[in-house]
Image (cartoon, rainbow, N blue to C red; front, side, top):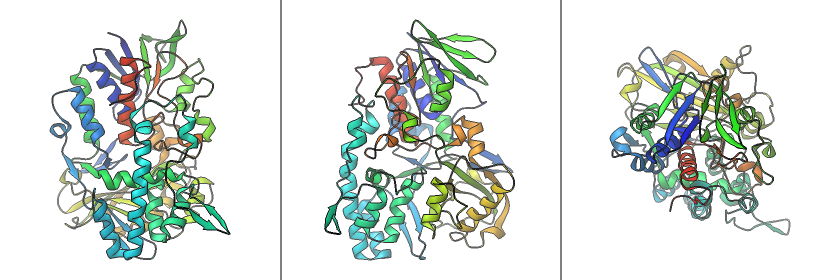
Length: 504
């Protein structure tokens, strides 16, 4: 039985902790804040409740597997999963609307045909066939296996089978998501639909590899799910599973260094000088903080390094939490994406730091959940947009000015929205930084093949023996399913050793 010290109580860290405890190890989680869940948080006020982090769960099989492997009660006995249908309602800049059914490729194509016409729908259906091929090629190496030692194969080889495109007597193939939209979809509404999946993680489609086609494919193939009571209930269930497996949690315990002895990680040290010894250390923190904690170099020659990508301040999420008077309409979609009419301005704001765009792409979440509102005559709504996390949030009136823009965009989906507002809370990347410890409150994206090293995450193992990375800032990247898989990979590497090759 080994002693395992886990830094942070995020979803990936707790997933690793539960699996390691089941394997017979003594696991202690040290969390600098007073609660668990990482970015999966909840704000409550006056009988209203809001998810301040992820609002929906893709690929729930990852957490089903966690609960099967760590106890008798399956996930569905610990939380109530609700399939969201339609999975999303889209409002495009030209006024076109379309509702996309959940987990049905044929249904999505049929909905697009009714809204956009037969030819655009056919092109989207053909695109999904190619996206599935990219998914089949990358699913195991980028989700289910530790990062390959020859990871450059993933970085340099584009798995998306792009259609040949003739331009100026030359034949080219799409290498970015934007080129897939322009050359293969050839409809600004389909392009907006495609790019919104990358934009949700702050990825600029003009630079994002074509392999990001797997993001809409995952949603169409595996669906989106909501956890009744809010996504915080999923974090609670994972935390309680850890407790049931006798994982110890110490809250208010900020780790300030990783203790090294005889050339390997040997524990963690705290601000008051106390040291907790360990045989293995699992760090569920972003690469900036991990670099401050460890004196030893964390990367061998040839490793994926975050600085190679230039990702010092990844985009963050800006949320406006709205307490509304008046009931929710029975047929209101759970999720509405309101697409910006100014694509280039939005992308430049996000990636270059230009002035605030006139209208951002916003996601409106309206769960039909009595647990989130004081009574049937009120409604809780979360409106969010992706923003540059290193903007001057919290200074002057930037927060409120941008919140006004977000609410104005959301009003396209909810006419009369501003007249219904009882009060609102603004949630900025600065607040996410304070709660999660992630530099600037940035949101990590899932790892993607192609596009060079900037779209992969560092391996779960480090150059310091006994120290492991877990969570969205490590392989296989950000998002709830990826966090859960990072926990499975780290547990496998500790239990089985470096020969571990992932689930079979």
